[in-house]
Amino acid sequence: MTLIDNAVYVDGIRVATPVTLDEAYALQEAHQGFAWIGLYRPSDKELASVATEFDLHPLAIEDATGGHQRSKVERYGDTLFIVLRPARYDDEHERLDIGELHLFAGPDFIFAPTLIGTVYGMNFDVMPELHWEYGYPVALTVMIAFPTLLYVLFKRRRWL
Image (tube, rainbow, N blue to C red; front, side, top):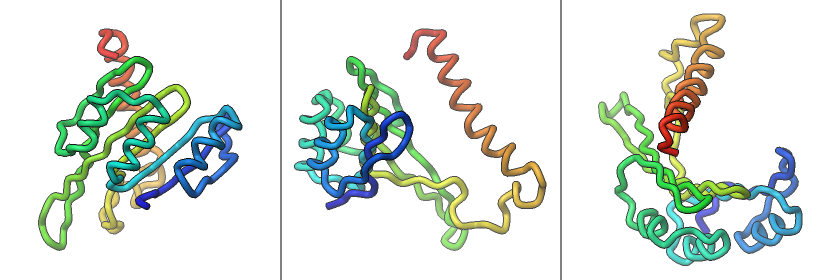
């Protein structure tokens, strides 16, 4: 199984850490909670299972199965399908590694296939926030503020 993380939350508190998808579905239903499911390169069977459980749109599943998608946000009813393309520079090999993360977000679940992500990779020496007292809070504030600003702008323009 390609399960990275699997959790059920109620009122923002993690109440269960199921070890299988079926257990996650049952616990999410029993607690009337919010399910977080993270899979790395899920099989077709795993994708089909999650798609059936959360009524995911077939076109979004097709995109998630095919991979090599551009960054995008698509709405299917009350579910969002989000494709992110995180990038990381590998200093040692002087190359840029680009990942692909597919997120399905609904009212009571987040499902993330092919989860790859970092903030700075492992190059701790050149992290600017380490050399300034307020560097890390400022860096995290910018990381939170920018997507929030984009969300507000997109909502105002009715793109979301």
